[in-house]
Image (cartoon, helix red, strand yellow):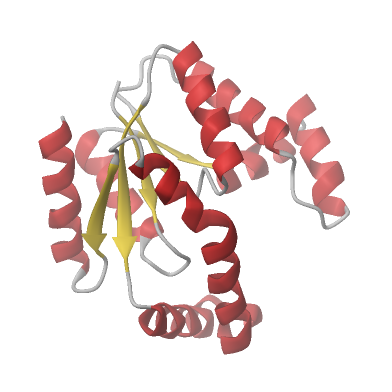
Length: 191
């Protein structure tokens, strides 16, 4: 099983590239945001639990999220591998994910880290906000705060996986196709 994490700050192109990589390599796309929405819509026990936190404006606890990831793995036992998008967001989540994968007899093989200049990230996100209809995306101050939260809470995940020699830095500026080719080259080296 080939599991990888597509990692990078908000606006780095993870969503765009995830879709292309899933199609290219036949991986199962695992987005915890999508998982949460599905579990809530299906009114599973985990979804009902998660909704209690979301309704209060709180983050869903790691143990609930890892429970959803565990259940999702069990639903896709024949998968070639998983592409994790937007997860793990903290070192605690990364450690919990590694523990879960070890129990499943697999591991994270590669972390592809999209490197993008912060000013470019802000420009992309504000532009996306104008086309997505999400008014909070158009606010540059909100976007700068999101980058700050990313640096404080999520960026340490890259250090966590770097210590295990799993991180490959990918230039995340340029054409979608050039970035995709760089990602594919890194994957081919590890496969």
